[in-house]
Length: 228
Image 1 (tube, rainbow, N blue to C red):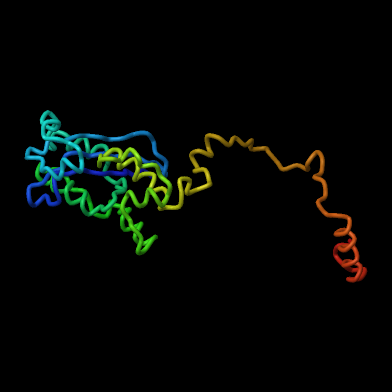
Image 2 (cartoon, rainbow, N blue to C red):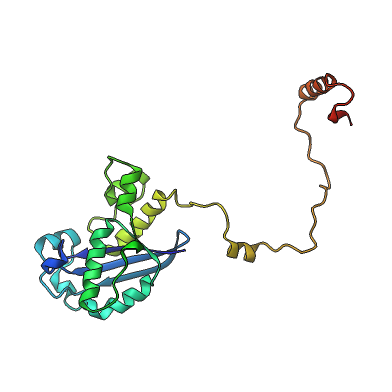
């Protein structure tokens, strides 16, 4: 199962007010394990960078000036996320709103809402009444986010991947090997048959336990199955 943990950084809160995406970061998981494949792109928003956005992201207008506009990276981004992989996002409604606005402006296919897995809602259901920000969840799960002095899409995606794995039951949610892995690692001959151990395992009964059992069976009479 392929999943994409994703985060965006924007110039503001509403695409309807002209705000744009300035950064996308994404991390690929396969069967809940990071594959090492990532996607990261800064984007020229073709508008002023508000002071408050610079303070949050540390990204200046000058830095973004030579970066590609969204239209030039839209297909590359869509190719990375694929057509059916789940998108793991913290506060998914926000990122999905911006992504689909940007895609609609360049006439690209929109992302279906049911592809999004919202870790914010997962955390609120699992820990009702507790803080559910990414930083709060890092503290809860003991995840090191000391390098997160500013919001950055790729770093936040990498941290969110760790948080997500904890939310679904820990960093190793399953103990079994999948079928494909077993096929590669377990080689069993067709004529294999179970055979007795060359040396029987030593008894774990104490002498007192053996005597107690014998006395118990003796009370059952001569037809007791243990006497056959």
